[in-house]
Image (tube, rainbow over all chains, first blue to last red; front, side):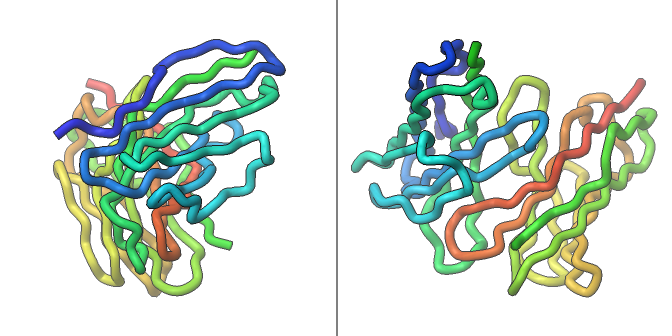
Length: 116
Length: 112
């Protein structure tokens, strides 16, 4: 069974540009969430999608957005890139949006974004 | 809000030594607790989880017990190997949905 797949793995963008990252969840998983990992701030939750609807959102500016398609694949977009957006962006998937907090969450390899 | 605190690294051990990485948490209600491992240049891999008090998660020789009275979820392994060298993250899921709150991570270095 294929894991969570993220593309591209590595990319370099210029300050002020925008970027779109893609995530394909594990087959059958319907919940997709995104995290940002930086040396200074560690791992921080960006947002979560289920059935094409954003269910939870972290404390990030509106430049960070996402969406989910009917096949559960997800994209996140960062507009007007800043140097501080350089990070590893991790996508995670889970089978269902549980009514409790017991779901197991599986991560992809991540997309390394460098802003110059 | 929810928070997770891990011991700072790096932790350097010799092969076959005993490992403990401390993790404590603050959360309302009854969170689920996780340990993830990250090898260089890779994403996060789930190592183990526990969903209620006194549960013990275990995998690949690693263990952690959910202690509600001390709000802790310490990771242990009886005999580490060089291949265990990685960064270990403690995390909690404190509410419905799939949002994780992570600790800062602890780098483990195992020397032959």
